[in-house]
Image (cartoon, rainbow, N blue to C red; front, side):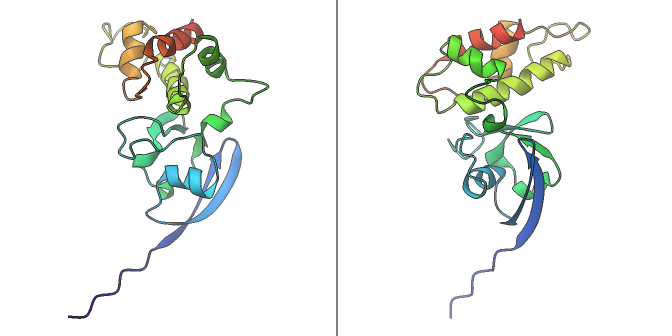
Length: 176
């Protein structure tokens, strides 16, 4: 039996606002958001760690919500606003969480840091909006940025160097 031809990839046009700039791409429909960011737009701050949504190194903020960019297709985000670590601050004007990570030594090897910071930015917005988590005790009161809340909400971001106490200290400093 002769081998069958492989199906040809399907392409689509997608446009989204990334770090304040409208960007348009023609992509294979199977391209993840992470691969679009890293390979097509050369925004390499978001890291490909596990590529299975388990480590959080690829966390970016899409329309105000934190997501694992390795688990979603770029085409699914047509017209949305995406913020990566590159869009949060500059070396001259760090985002408050970036500055806190430096002050509190919230990183060691630094591989997970972009995902940790993007996750923390969106997480603090969740707390400010009083969105409860699994450890929120009183659902009728405003949510507080307690250590248990922060640890629960950041549990999807893994740090192989175990800099967790410093990461929590950095987030608490900004939350205060």
